[in-house]
Length: 240
Image (cartoon, rainbow, N blue to C red):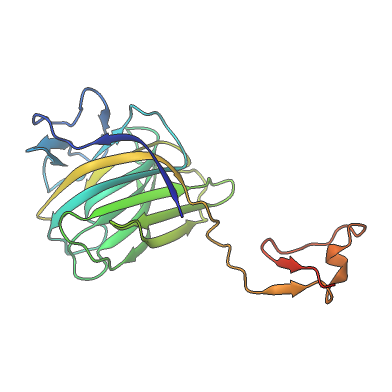
């Protein structure tokens, strides 16, 4: 089972404010053009015609992290639009981050994407059941030195998507988490934001296919033999 260690939460239950600050806990992303704000005890973009984003910068930057929130949304006609969860954005003036977005589009309504220096790459899109008020969690583990794995979870923390981003040169490797909006939908809101440390616990590629008897390959268990290459996840059983 994955491990989620919460480090910060926000219900957005406070007086209206634009942009969202919550006593300087949030910092607005400047490239999108719009801002995130608090209206009637929920977060939302200031305009549904413009992208927006806000990072929870009080915690500092990290690599293995998650963000979650409850969403409502009306509309959505293309992939990659709607309320978003953001991970690993290190600089507020440049979009270098991972983003999960979801809308009410009938098919292909959920997307995981990567931004490098404001350049957008769609990584994976799928059809995800979504009822207003549903909670979604977006998480990331690993670095470009090895392997970056992205995860999406539903309201009961069932894994709904996993994507390995193996084509990363310049990040995103660390940064802040937050919330965002990708235009255009008719309306959307955020509630019950949470972020913190994430661990997937079990390597995603650990899928044993069988047991290899040592009687067939005795040298694999002979400590005197060197330079024997054994696949990473072969499971050995000594046969007496």
